[in-house]
Image 1: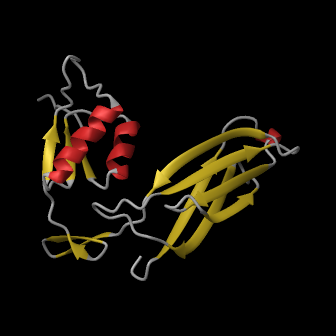
Image 2 (image 1 turned 120 degrees about the horizontal axis):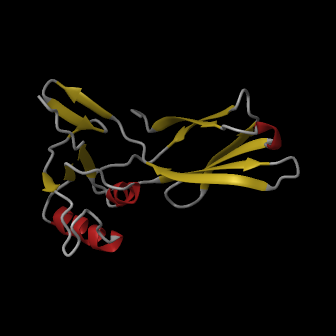
Length: 178
């Protein structure tokens, strides 16, 4: 990513009856929603791979340039059998001695911790918009990271963290008996 060029490798593994699948299509949309890459391939031993190289806008704290990848499985008549979508951001994390660098710049981590307590619920179950509002509040206070302490947030919440341009630290809830 040093010159703004990224390499993306997407692979799909299909289990089950692969004979009904003729083509796997890949489509990459940029932050503006415009298509920046596409391709198709056939399954080889149940797997299809697509590679793309291109200029990108980097995801950064406060500047969440997100791309969207759509993968479709098509039959011989071109009919859609199944599809999946995901969002992704291109970023480069490195270290320089004790310093953490994000996209080549010093990163000072300023985080807040959440136990997932959202009254009146007893278990973590925040409404997505309530969670988004919480993130925006803490971002406006100068924080750039949320630490999920001793609970695993659903993917939907991690996607919101990415969309809001913040970092996530997930502390796996594990206790080791003696």
